[in-house]
Image (cartoon, rainbow, N blue to C red; front, side, top):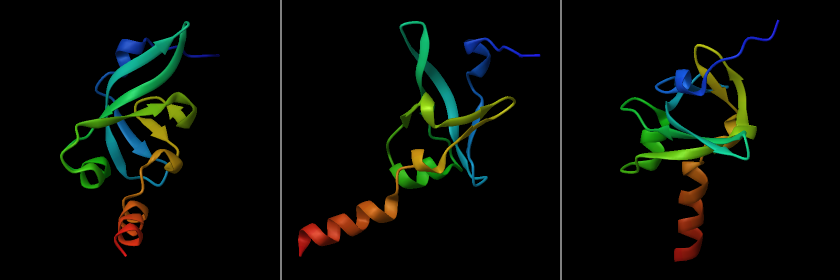
Length: 95
């Protein structure tokens, strides 16, 4: 049987990457034409999102990257911005 959840029940739900790391907390949903377009994820103190973004408050994750929704939300690792790649790009542009 299909279990349905209200969108508002998802607020403050912890978001994990499929590798098991805490990504952040759901702050808001983005809905377009009666469909969930994406999720605004807030960086928390111990999340990898906080380590990657530093002072930024959060990111928007498109719903297509969501793998599972239940007591927690699990997202694809391809939704995680890569800190190491951006660092390498900065070094290449400074040379």
